[in-house]
Length: 95
Ligand SMILES: O=C(O)C[C@H]1C=CC(=O)O1
Image 1: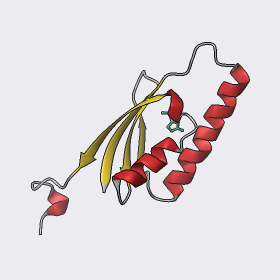
Image 2 (image 1 turned 120 degrees about the vertical axis):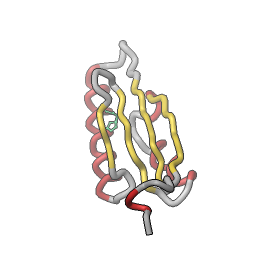
Image 3 (image 1 turned 135 degrees about the vertical axis):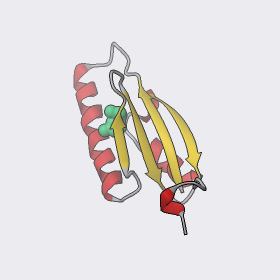
Image 4 (image 1 turned 180 degrees about the vertical axis):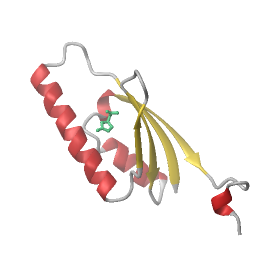
């Protein structure tokens, strides 16, 4: 199942700078791990915002939730999920 996911990150202004650096490094490690597993095939920065647009390819809603909530920045994110279905006019979906 494919999901369009938007993540908006909001780190507290008073977050300890060392903790901030650790969190961002851990987030990158986990993001790379999920991409290598093939469950996070697209990751794009939203220009001018601390946000990303991603595509996840996972077997279920529960699996998506497990991926998203495993991200170290999870507690600092607002996440919007849109489940995707095949469009009948998609060239790639033509018989
Ligand atoms: O920077 C972000 O958009 C948040 C998060 C998503 C991937 C990653 O490395 O960090």
